[in-house]
Length: 458
Image (cartoon, rainbow, N blue to C red):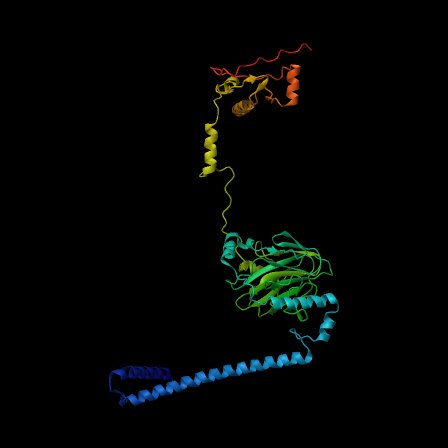
């Protein structure tokens, strides 16, 4: 019997299932000599069951509501205790007393910077500026890929943008941010910052922050930001006074990587391809890559446009965007197919080609007969002279264009009567100025041509 206990249990289970399935269809049944009868039901039993279910539901709902009220009371009590403690001890929003601030902020410049930063936070709280990706920015990312990200260098920052991802700080406390935030569609995003030039006494603060951010503050010193200090290896989050050391000091040529998980708000760091175990949590904001410095230095950013030092980021494609976007390349040089303007120009140039069989003399056309230049009392008609001159000049240009070379004959322009140099030349009898006179078939009676003066004997 002991050896066959699995079969016994299986048989009992099947018998029970048969009995349960048959109960709704029969009043009684007999199994192995046992008679099972379906109990009688009435309306009172159904009402009692409904009341019991309602009581259970109200009990569960009341318990959950009570737990929520308890948590709200505890939170309110905690806030009141914290405010009372700040009021009694004279603590600020960072939990620092006046004596502690005076020790950590020894000079007037640092205290003024701290006060201005707090005023900046009150003026621009998180959410006051919409920094989510707009449809235009998303279209730009689809078009350019990862090349859509670049640093913005404003006028109040003492820095120079050497390229879209390379920045040179000229001196002082400065901070730059990218034009686009970190995306949120994927589970992880990653970028790297390489230190190109940096003196030993200058610190770079590499991290991410919301926008707008004070242009004179280091990354991690203000709310909604976190940054890694290259000179101490510590990470600051939302405070300039509290930092936890997680790594080593970075030198010129070192590469610091930053990974961000938008769904959990976790941020982590790498150094030259090796990941640190420590993380920063609670960064559930629209974050922008943010780099700060307290002196002259330069850096280069890699958002995924080239390979990362951290191998896992290359394998899993953790860059901020695709390497290549959907932008179409420019047309091939010299191709004029299916181009209306180029085809029209080509057809015009073909139609305007001259007949090479004509000579130079045939290509030169005379002025139309309708143009008349008459000399009356030693003067010419100025308006007609100008028309004749323009017509001849156009004919010369056409002939030069068709023949490909300039005509050997050159005739000086006609001078007006008021030109003193022309008058002197005419009086001297110079042969270089020969008036061109063209007559109509029928000359008007009121105008008769006047012969040119004979050359002087002198």
